[in-house]
Image (cartoon, rainbow, N blue to C red; front, side, top):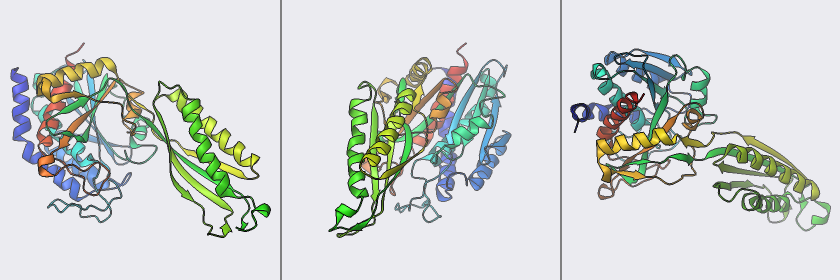
Length: 397
C-alpha cells in the first residue's frame, strides 16, 4: 500500500466525525431546488475554514479550486448536489429534518458533506500532487432542467476546463463498504409528458351526442406503448409510463376533458427525439380520428448519462486499489435519471455509486422515501475514495 494511500485513509478516518457533523447539519436544514441559500452559505463557510476560497455560480451553487504543484498540468472536477425533496421525514433520529415537508431523501446531504471531506483531505495534501481539483457544489438536481445545465451555462466547465469530472451517488441497494461502477450508458434521459384530451361532455346514458375523452384517452395510452415495442430498436432500453389520469366526470357523466401525465425514459438521444415526435403525432391523430383533440406537451428533462469507458475503467482500478477487489462491483443499467448526465455530454465523466445499506441496522429504505437514511460509515469511505480517485486521475497524462 502506497504511503499516499495510507495518508488519505488516515485523514478520512480522522475527519469522519466532522464529515458526519456536516451531514447532520445539512440533513436538519434541507432546502428545495433553487432555494439553497443557507446551504450555499454553510458550504462556503466550511471551505473558507479549510483555507479554500470559493465563487458563487448558478445563483445558489459554488465553485472552488484546490491547486497542487504545477496547477495547469491537468484539471479534474468533482461534483456534489445540494438540494432536498418535498417529503415529510418519518425517521426518528436526532438529526431529523427541522423543516416540515422538506427532506434530504436522496442523499444530497451525504454528497455535499462527503465532498467537503474530500476537499479537506486534498487541501491538506496539495503538496503531494500535481494539477488542480475543481469542486462543484451544485443546486437543483431534483428539478428540470437541472442545476447541472445552469452550472454549465454559467461557466462551471470553463476557466479552467476540466479534463474529466467525477460524481458519486448514494446506493441504498448496495451494502456499505462497497462501490459500484459501470462503463458507457448507465442512466436514462427523463422527459415529462402532459396530455390534455378534449371532447364534448354530457350524460353518460347519451354517448351518441358526446365525444368521450375518457375513451379517447384510453386508446391513446394503450396505442402509445406500441411505439416502444414496435418502433424502438430492441437493443436500446426505453420506458414509457403514465402515472396519472384525471377525468372529472362521474358514473353517469362524460367529462369535457381528460388530463394524462407520464414519463418517457431513453438511453439514446436520437431515439429520444424520434420517440417523442412519434408519440405526439399518434396522440394528436388518434384524438382527431375519434372526434376530439389532444394537446401534447413535453417538459424536457435530463439527457441520458454516459460514463466515459476509459476514465471509468481507470477509476474502477483505482477504487480496487483503495477498497480491495471484493468491495468493488459492476453496476447494471438503471432507468432512473440524474442531471449529472449534462456534464457527461460535455466532458469525460465517471458517475459511481457509494454503498450505504446496512440490513442488520434496518437501514434499507430506498431514495425518495420518508425513511431513507444511510450507514454513516459511508462518510469515511466516500471522502477518502474520491480524494484518491482524483489524485490518481491527475497522474494520468
